[in-house]
Length: 400
Image (cartoon, rainbow, N blue to C red):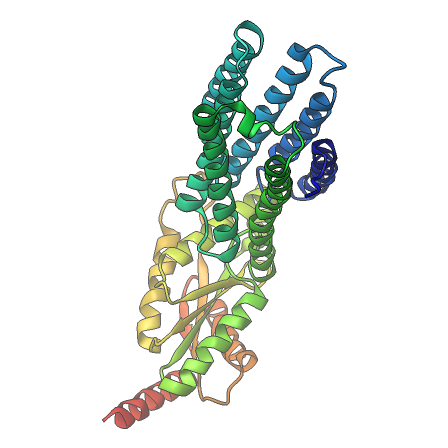
């Protein structure tokens, strides 16, 4: 049976790792703030390329430089991928563990390469070191990974690779180095090298899969949330309204909307500057969100205007929520922010046929009435309140 030359397989691995390093670095340059750990993975792949080059120089360079350098570069590169995965999942990179394990690994390989040559023990030391790095990444995915196919795929690859390198180290100690010597052409060495080549690519693809998933979620959130206050924007609010309106058709539960506008916000910007104005807006968004139920939605509709949608909320109950928001904003904030007040208009869905624009228009009309009546107050649209009571009565009758 013909087998691939080990040098050919290593060259293939080198080329693929180099290509993936370039891809990873390109993604890192574009999304370093959104997705962490990409830089460490890119550097780790580059070290794998260096390791392959050093290994290819065996025979031309002294073993202390070629073999020891190649093993050190491999360990450092795989360890960097571990640090990158830790950063990706928001964990503090375990630099001390990384440094200690790499130093011990290099020292062990140097001892059994130069002082007391023993190939099987070198393989065992290397396998143990990289097993720790792969196993740590598998643990990170298990504990912190999203319950999604991308995480399952990445975690399974890491766990499989950890088991393979540990098994190779055990075989080296038990059966001797001849059984795991990858430099000797043969069926077993070719299979293992081909699998290592494939896994080097797959592990990178696995990490790119979870990174792409993270980036997709970030971009989706950006499309539906206001970047300053982190509440919904118009698009996100519109989607939420359509979902709740569908529930309204099925259950007949009322939908109540609050239109909230800061009083004299322009004077805050003029007096304290726009940076302080942005902090005030973020503070108001937090106060509003803290006064709502988990089932409610709050959105910023540009400028200093906020809108709240409250499913299954009668107008008289919504008035209590609005009053709580108004009262909380009048209290000292403890953050050095200028005081502010709000005017609030309350409106309820008048019918199943009514659209969001009509509901917003009635809430805005109530808001303008609050402004005209002196600001820092709440006004309610009476048409929606009457319709809400009618829908609630009809829903109750149908339930009986």
